Figure 1 (cartoon, helix red, strand yellow):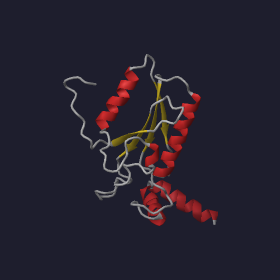
Figure 2: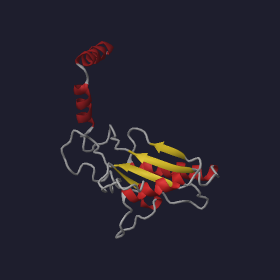
Figure 3: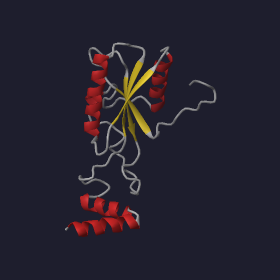
Figure 4: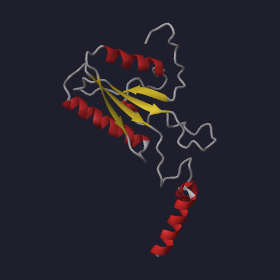
Length: 175
């Protein structure tokens, strides 16, 4: 990790890493990785990921106070690497949310799983917990991808012609 040819990573990485707060029984370190990718790659707006690279439930995380600088992505990677290197048999527990999950729901779910892991796994210095949030659009809610109707039109126009014809014929026959 500290080799001479290792360049410092700029903090405009495709993700941001936050440290989860440990509970009273917390022995396993936990981290939450947030993708900074755009919700919809087809939009040209520069600010389309403005809310996606931050967290909504600040109470779940360490070092998130107004006015204080957050640890850089590089610093967090080095911290995770040191934890893994210090264990003779390191293991990583990973949680990735599903489709159509809001940022808040993802963080809450991740925090619950992290608390569960810390309650039921007693082997400190072996495990680390990593939660990951990727941009997940909600097909019903209006967001930068449009409203439900626009999303339906985009989905239909993306279908291969034969599949689109089959869908239309099937809908006509079913009526």
